[in-house]
Image 1 (cartoon, rainbow, N blue to C red):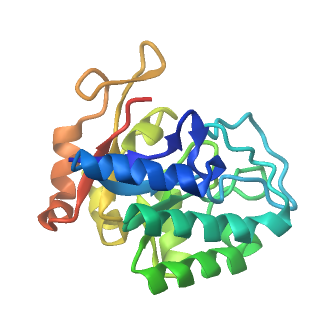
Image 2: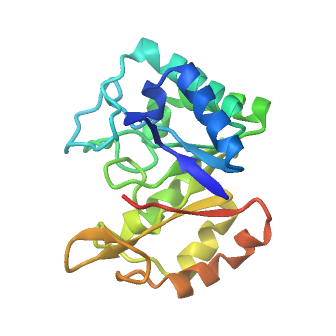
Length: 232
């Protein structure tokens, strides 16, 4: 049994105290439940030059993070990964604005991404950027462009097909096969209804999961791979 942690006691995971994290770890251990990933809000924040185009749902995390606090939040996330015995840390690609869309966002905070990648290597934690409609990497094309231009192989892609389809876009098996070498061991699973314009349980929406998951089947040959169901 596994669970992915994004919030705790009604608060974003990075807004909780260390004693609360230790308490939940003891509770999960007593139920023989492992934590498959820490879905942090890291990098789902504004940069110095950003002019956000839309409201951002950060699940209780204020994206207006002062520059001097960003590094300490990265440290905190890795501390919580250690406490929870987590081997995957989800991050984002910065809140998008008209001039930052796509892979160019990386350069504005390259030092912070490299710092996170360095910690990930030190602690043997997989660092993975999730595609998100309000962030700079939201489409498969943008994900591929980022991986082709980035000099940081330690940063993987945490694929969320629901986020892509919610933007009115589709994904082909060929695109996923091209993305496969860059995928993290975890992907997020949810479906999307074009009728209600909302996320729905898998098989109740428009995403052809059977066809698309077949394209990345080698990913699931690893016993550490995981599909995390997002309930929203």
